[in-house]
Picture 1 (cartoon, rainbow, N blue to C red):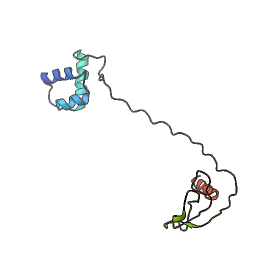
Picture 2: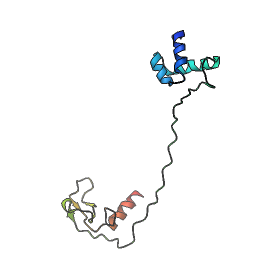
Picture 3: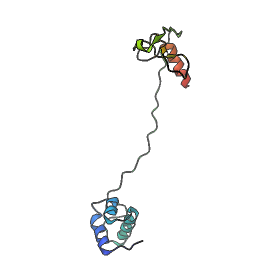
Picture 4: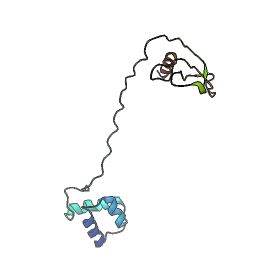
Length: 136
């Protein structure tokens, strides 16, 4: 550890009210912890202004993350749950047709259900229920 020179102490005292400890550390080529320790000792000796060793411009503390919001999922409307599939290709899909892929699980889907969708959803009633039950 190197000793503090009188010039460094004067610089610390003059920079302390308007600069952060990190800025002072950069300017004096010393670790931030060394600046804070020296400032604490100078505060005890009465050479620095302030009631405690904390810097007058403290860093903002991070607040704890907010708990996750609870969302109430409304059940899909009651109605006929039987699949009314009208198999179609990806080229014929639009917002009125069910986007449920048909075929093997790990194979790229080329055919889709194509039935009438529930308003505001991408699937028909049957596949919407299947999707929701798979997450429960």
